[in-house]
Length: 249
Ligand SMILES: Nc1ncnc2c1ncn2[C@@H]1O[C@H](COP(=O)(O)OP(=O)(O)OP(=O)(O)O)[C@@H](O)[C@H]1O
Image (cartoon, protein in one colour):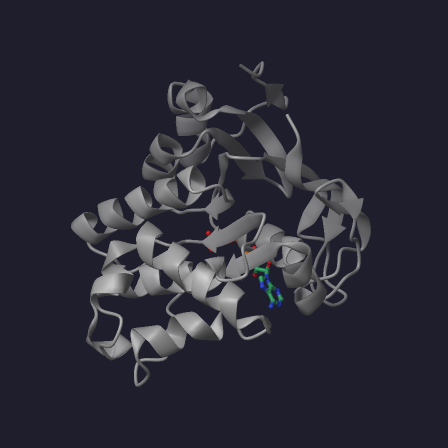
């Protein structure tokens, strides 16, 4: 299956500190949700920063749609088709939902294309259409997250990187947000999802990767990972002796 983005044998870290990612390889096939789970500090957000060009890898390769884009910064990565929805809340509360979403298309010059993309994101995220002229700050946390998702889809990315989309949300809003992640995938965008809420993320994803010590320790179809006792072990503080590969479907 063709990959929208591939990170190959990535070494990356901050400043002069020891590397956080130590030979990490992950790939997101077209039309799939891949989730990264792992203990605090395992490097999950760092993977997304490398994938979106915010952090340049010390070594390794980044391929988008098979094209080598290693070393490109965030603007070029966005133009290549990689959109990053950062951790926390990034809507402008004093602006309308419309203004927030249209910001995502600021690089688009063609008015017809902007109108087409606007209609598309309103269809994928009904709450965005319903609250189009409301101030974004009046929306609930889960609704604001959908505004962020809609903004990221304005440029028709190949892959969207989602960093802890359920952070700070109650269980009902979390359910809604994960349903919208599935809608994004079904609408044709591949997703690389980072989550603390490992169970919910694996229930939503097609494929899962467990990060530990800066590399992927276990990977495979999400349902198989959910049933894997080693996953529980990791979260209880134990470590698997050897990296394990679960055969692909
Ligand atoms: N801007 C930064 N400068 C220096 N070190 C950083 C920076 N961001 C992250 N780190 C360090 O990199 C390591 C991995 O952090 P990262 O945020 O990628 O982990 P994570 O798996 O996403 O963690 P969490 O689940 O707690 O969000 C940690 O040791 C962290 O302290």
